[in-house]
Image (cartoon, rainbow, N blue to C red; front, side):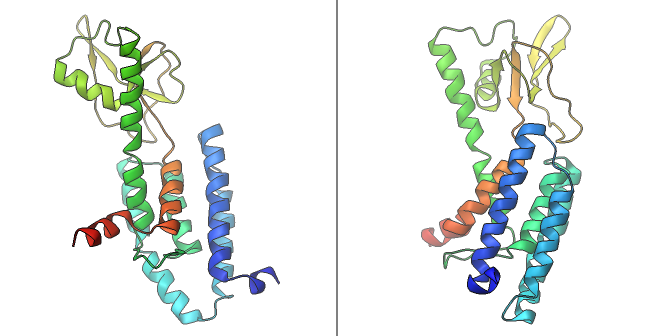
Length: 232
């Protein structure tokens, strides 16, 4: 049998990468992921337990990994990311409990913390887009009545877009003036912007950050833990 011929840890990782690939594709294309994905891979995670060489050690590791469950559900309820992202983290914890191909120390939260670090990248992507637009002498703040500091923050948070598909509006009207709005956007309750040529903050599927965070976990480990260890 395939699972017997391959190292179980490798099979788990390959399966997890397959799940993340499917979920990312669906989230990018449809902005929703059918629960059957989590049910199916959750069932596979249960099957893997019985193929382990040390059943009770696997149960212990799995239990430790499931510490992520209340954290993921809490973050979901806060609206920082969607239900699909929470379920993804939970199933991932069951499918590959604290898995890595490196000897680097990892925790049940490694994928999540790595994902949080990756989520900073769009800030610099926005900045680059805005600087390029400004270099082309585009008036990206046309009609916006804000201070220089607010405009500086806006350069990182979003950009002025003609095609606003899958973006959250950053503009609001106060009196007769356009203002920039940096308020919190609930991941599941905020409507996508349907205006054109307006400031938006990109609504990037968090599942992509989770996928990247998991890939880093497998190859490198926990970025924060390794950084702290390198300092000491």
